[in-house]
Length: 192
View 1 (tube, rainbow, N blue to C red):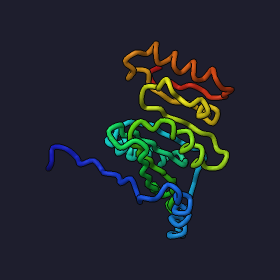
View 2 (cartoon, helix red, strand yellow):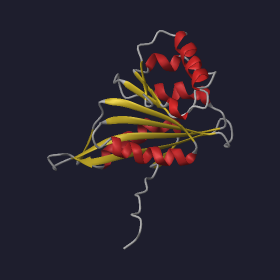
View 3 (tube, rainbow, N blue to C red):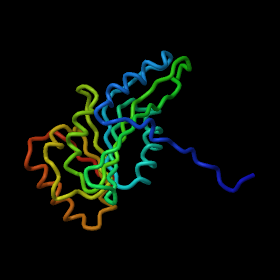
């Protein structure tokens, strides 16, 4: 018997051109008539690095077992070429509690090369599912150049101040960014 149990690996899904994401998602749902697409919210996750992108895909698969959502995963690869954008689509399907039908949630993944933070608001806004609430989980430190337009769409901002090297500075950056726009968002610090 092995000492460790192998962890499942999760694929980013099918690579797609950014301009064809919605078209390819429609095709994905037309392929299988036994699955039902479900979404009660939008969940966007920002992370840094390809490893974090893989880990968050596994996390999204787990989250969608009990929370139907469209997930938008944005990973920044600072070593990649600036302006490079790669995209994938995926569906996480789980059998309903009644056991009769599969319930599926969409995941759209973006890998941004270089320091392309300015693309994040457009990526998020253009791929939201209808007028459902948006939960944004920011898994990095905040930049001084955050686009405050992003905050106008976010209903709940999730972050973890425990990982910050300079918490006071980070809270100042966040406060100043939020002060520039009218927002209804709720702050959720995983450290509290």
